[in-house]
Image (cartoon, rainbow, N blue to C red; front, side, top):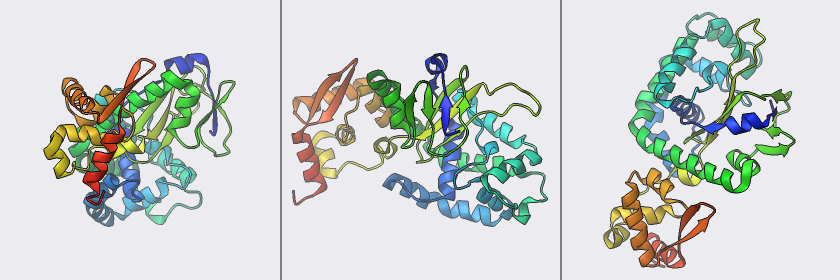
Length: 334
């Protein structure tokens, strides 16, 4: 699985998709391994870890199931069904597919994710898959849904950034930016990770790229029914949104800056730690395209923001004056 062989048709048909189920699964993985990648993730973990831990303490079977499912190098396949690419139906369909997994298939997956004898709590119950689906449904309703509009804007902004990367640098640049161990090796070979698994020929299948806001990632493909010789029809690479985007918009602008230029305009200025397009800024702020354009014009007239064209995109960035203004607000001694 470390290297996938792809053909031109697979690359031409590949696309980015938004998956509420992948976002929920990534959030569950983050709760199970609560190491924060940035301050926004730390705030989210602090808000939801107590309830999550209390839920598992009351259900030791599900706790043992998660411990076995999230292995050091592999996640149990039944927990990561490959998206179809329809976000509005993605969660319900995915949870139904997880819940319908036979217990024997669940245990077979757990034997791969956690080699060795299974813990005693997992030997008897026949509802392991249903327990996993119920927990994922809880994670969605309690921890993800309340902030799903913001998360979706961040995901959509990441897709815009990756698409731009692809248009400028081609597949080699796009793949290299998705995950640290992912590389385009040439001659149709895509290295997914550094693990020494047999290569897979995915020529002719659909290739989906699925961004999530937690700093988590995995790959998936649907296994054919037992005895069937039909190859998987789609493969998914789930990857974390760029760190600069993942925590975007969570920190309120300094009071002085907000009073000077307005709260909405101050947020735009703060987001320009890296060059962004108006489309990305619209997705990250939740403001309308026209409003973002007006803010950029005012900031540009004040020489706090500059712009440059790259290919078909126009990127906006903070000028030295903008950096100085923001630094003065963050550090009163500047």
